[in-house]
Length: 554
Ligand SMILES: Nc1ncnc2c1ncn2[C@@H]1O[C@H](COP(=O)(O)OP(=O)(O)O)[C@@H](O)[C@H]1O
Ligand SMILES: O=COP(=O)(O)O
Ligand SMILES: [Mg+2]
View: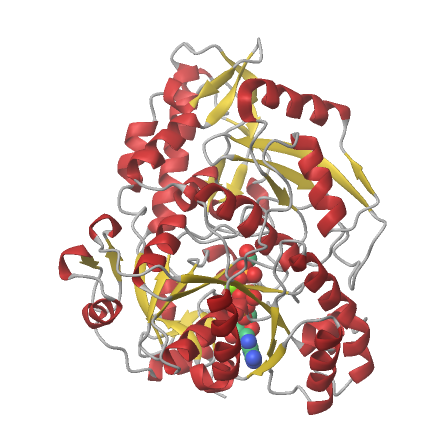
């Protein structure tokens, strides 16, 4: 099988104007960025439909990922193939994983969105705009302090950091500005990766440009000595930040390898942020199509939980069906096979042992009132016996399971999945509900997710953190949902505790209030909001060949 980028290069794309026309996007709403990309001015779009929303999630992944994005593309193409007017909504990839470990976020094999190289690199500049807006606020905070600190910001309590869309551990904790009087007042700060920025979350949760600016103004950048909050609007940065984001708030329209439409918009990771694409793209798609396929990052313990408890709660959305992607390789890993040995031949018993992870995720998704359909994402080396075990175990857990070959075959490889999922979406999910009510106290929300989803026996919240949560409740933020930051590999905070650990302790190290985005981030264990590069980063294999073509992107 050729590589993803080789497949992409051989693809026959149609002009984005044709993709738009097929999707029902009128010319006046289309803002082309070249021949194969465009932004869509959603405000002018007609409401032609009231679509069904299908969420694609997964079991806990190997470092490469188990194919949520690939399956979302394949399922969307397959729904078109069976005559369903469908819109695909994905996140935009970050440069961090692309040049780090995981690679791009445009799907894979015959189920990709195009043009994958541009999508995985600078795309339409949204992440650069978010980075600039975030760092404009950072610069204006230090500038305000430099010129006399009129807001009495306590230099020890500036919570607003800087961001960069790259994995750079050297920037996690820094002291600055150094260099003496002309540079300002030194203080501890640091960088997060852009996808962990509150501005990324705001862009993904805002309903329109006006709501975006209000949310930007609501950002708390730090506190005074009397512990009262200082807002972004006190620094007078929100109007200029909105100018920097006025194009980024418009969703990006591209196409699949089968020339079907896809919105790619926003890109928060699901281990350190809420992991869902934008509400604007999703709601627009629901107005345009009968079925909308969207995904949430990493496993159902992270992306799916946040999709339902944060995105759906805030936007008044609800999933009509849920697809849970399972793979032989991840179940083998969860069954005890070391990462480096996952392709070393058939191991039915390891798959069976690892199926406890699948069982746990099915049980968890059911807590939201929906039984997921299992998409067994077939890899080339999977044996019939290994696949059969997944199907057998899924069905024993009360879930339908469908073998999918969309990576190798495109939409044709997911038509069985499309038929079963469309039927379930048509029935809908009348019992859907969030995991906890908005009025539950913040600490209890953290405990609920940790015990109900992660199956922890104990949730260690230090007294200083509890005090901070109480303070935020007194300030009026008690109704906010929580956004757990935790490793994507385990239900626990130990990334090596695979399968279905229970009875462990979830230790909350820090909480951050995203007053503009509308949630409280609870950081559990050692998860970092600025990832580091691996010993051999993917970047070492990315280059331009003699014809100036990009090689090494996947
Ligand atoms: N069935 C498959 N066979 C081979 N490679 C696959 C298959 N499904 C996905 N991949 C590859 O695995 C990686 C992760 O897929 P992706 O869809 O990005 O997963 P996720 O969105 O869950 O992180 C990508 O490089 C993709 O090309
Ligand atoms: O936030 C993580 O997303 P993927 O699972 O698609 O890598
Ligand atoms: Mg993905």
